[in-house]
Amino acid sequence: MSDSPRTVFRQEALEHHARPEARGGLLRLMPGWIHATWWVVVGLVVVGGVGLSLVEINDYARGPVLVRVKGLEEVTSTEGGRVSRVLVRRGERVHAGQPLVELYAGGETAERERVDQEFRSQLAAWLLEPANPGTRQALAGLRAQLELSEARMSERVLKAPCDGRVGEVRVREQQFLQPGEVVASLVRDGAETWAVALLPGQYRPLLHPGQPLRLELTGFPYSYQMLEVASVSDDLVGPAEVRRLLGPGLKDALTVTDGPLVLVEAKLPSETFHTGDDTYAYFTGMPGQAWVKVRARNGWVTLLPVLELFGKRRG
Image (cartoon, rainbow, N blue to C red; front, side):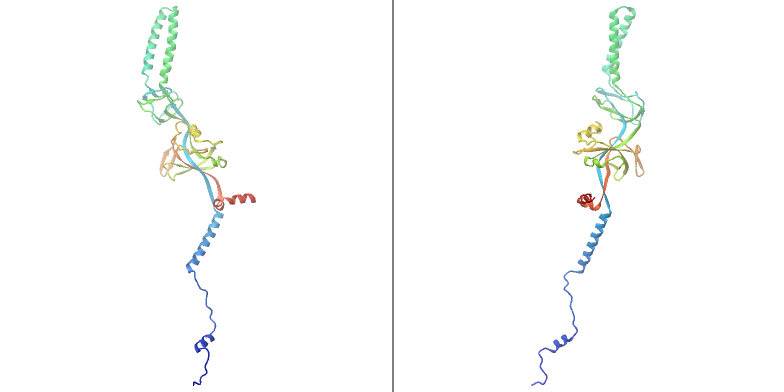
């Protein structure tokens, strides 16, 4: 029988219990990178919120635009016929009354020669018998026919209505014309070049003269020109009315969308524009795009438009 006292606990358990108390940590289920990402996201949200409160976002009215020359005179044919001669070229200076295009006048020429010959014969007969009333009456009738024939002959020659420069010649020799067709255009001295923009009608209350207008011509991307709005139409117009206002020469130059539109005009500073080191001339009918800044709103109001309503109520 052993002399050592018997204990209930093992010696190792007693020694462990006698040691100073050591506390463990909580169980970690989330990796460290998730914790770091969380704070990055929070920081981005804070920065974005502050940025939206400080930044202003511009709202633009955008639409198609056409270049138009004010002071442009179009010469049209009053009668149908075939072009005999084209007497001018593009860019040539002309004076009022100068012939531009001649139409064939074979029948009118033959008729005038016939009447002229009869007139001369009756005139000779009247000189031989001044008292003959029949000869005097026939002479008066032939004189009226001669004047009518000369008027018809003059209609076969299309003349310049004013002094200016030939813009475009739209016909060629041997071409057949219908009455009312445009044969040439003349640019008056002192003519001005304008940009005519068609903007959505919803922006009409926000548009007024003096606003900046940015113009980009088709075919010249990122070559912007800054203009100033000179006039805004009072009434909204539809596609049919827009075509009527643009006239027969330009009504098909733009694809007009459905819905009300407002016409905005801005004067171009010169007859030419620059792109890089090159200089180009404006031409009537050149298309492009126009932007007009109508308002600037806070970033939060742009993101959540309902905030604007709350601001108005508070005010």
